[in-house]
Length: 145
Image 1 (tube, rainbow, N blue to C red):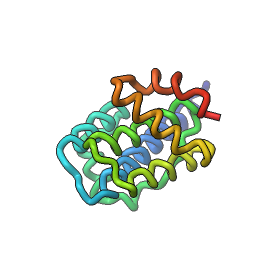
Image 2 (spheres, rainbow, N blue to C red):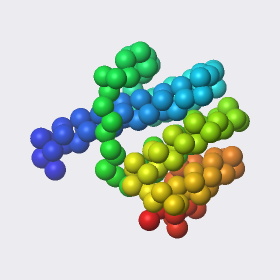
Image 3 (cartoon, rainbow, N blue to C red):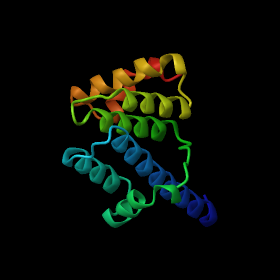
Image 4 (cartoon, rainbow, N blue to C red):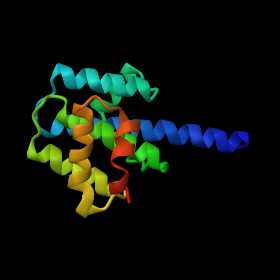
């Protein structure tokens, strides 16, 4: 990989990470309640994705300035969906709008609509059992077609 390709990949990763943060913020906002446990998870995911707290706050204040970037790597797609489901269920209450948004993102990421519900509930069960995204991806492999 030459420098130009490496720089492009870095920019793609940054844009994808910013887009992911925006999607997570949308998930938090859809139920009208943004509590501390959701904010802590959001900060943790941002840090893991190289997004500073000040960048996160800018995204939160101006979400319209962040465009959706489709992750191209299958593992990254799954990890983003995992994070969205985790955000949906972190407060122990799943609202219908959160579930609809999770299904929307699953389909947008290329997962089959008819399997999206089952995929989301499988991920949720894995989260409840303390499994990380890699473990959840292995367990959900049959749904990732």
